[in-house]
Image (cartoon, rainbow over all chains, first blue to last red; front, top):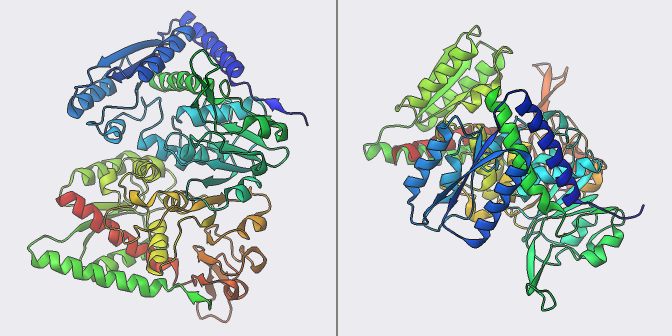
Length: 304
Length: 304
């Protein structure tokens, strides 16, 4: 089987077009638009860029977005008050708090205060727990995007061995839990309802003999933040490789002085694969579109 | 290395003695006793037995226990009212709702309504999510008991390959999440703080070639509810086997007409193992003692 690139950029564009159409239909039937709140604390340049991208993506599909920009001098108590106000604001269907937060604020405390029904980043303990238990939940953006990508390319997961490298709260742990669920426990409105039922192994920095484990995998999901971690000797012929890494490495030939690479030695691994994501243009574009899908899901739950 | 039986009955007795001593000390310093609420709906004979055992275990260590016995005709709304009353009752440090509930009541809805700080069964989405995220949490009884058992026998998990068979909400999924955590994220008051950091594989009914996976395991945790599932050809020499199954099988030679067996073909698997739990007397006794530990943990959080 020849290698196929999993084109996240194209799939994300397809999904945005579907969302736009669905929201147009809702609007024509007299419904209000969904509304997303985006809380940003301080002016971290990367955060400002991410928030701008999210605002633009919302505008493109017809989701109303409101930026709530707060001083980096805000206290944890004041930020918790903002969260509570947004929880209670019936004009807001969902909201996110852009991370990272200033070091004097406990991120876990702030995230835990978000009403899980409005938690469109899917990072509250309640949504994580509901995902684990197979209850209806809002799944965090990257895991949802990975599942969607597999689904759109008709890559089955049932009975397959999925090896996840990395145990972060935003990717490794939730994607492992998502792909091992019974599929009938899938989310309403997900096109990926046929996914799940995978045998999942979670590996991390303390794992012994990682290559022996990855060589048994049908699907490898790498989310370790370590350029070149997955090498050709670790991958068996015909595997599917999902590269979640986004690392900047110096590149004097690039006008920006750097280029983006994933966690996979793409050049040598790709020829072995049936499917592989490029970086950039693979998982990355799926993440923002998942936020849009989550906002629509929260909106539908809210108005119903 | 000769095979060692993991004597859950003895370890549970040791822990009860430790708890009794700690609670005696608290009492002598003028503190009130911890108080556990146990909600039971209807008169399912197995549930009545479990509740009696829990009441007796509480009495033995000096935890006050209050049985809240409700008619099986109670509506879901009425039961939710009881849960809310217990959430608000400052004389109760923690409480459990004995499962199963009558079929007209949604168990997930009832469990989700419990304040996670009082959820000493560790079954609310908030506690499951906090466990996954490595935040302080109350861990459900059987996973906590398994971790304690490994800890008391000084069986390391860091870097080891743990294979979990079964993906239930009360055992398989939470024990997998618990054993793969970074150990510095362990719970306050746990003697098992050195545990965690395992490479974990979760297998289930849809897993292909289960024997090939279990043969690579250092530790196998079987929680499938299927007598004789784990056979000798699936276990490598020197493995540790934790058998969570409790199955009744007919036995005309027994005065009760049945005997209890686990999910492991004990007779043939045990000679291969460095460590193995018997059934009964292995994981079972650890489960009730975990409830006592969780109640003490909730009490300490409550009074501090």
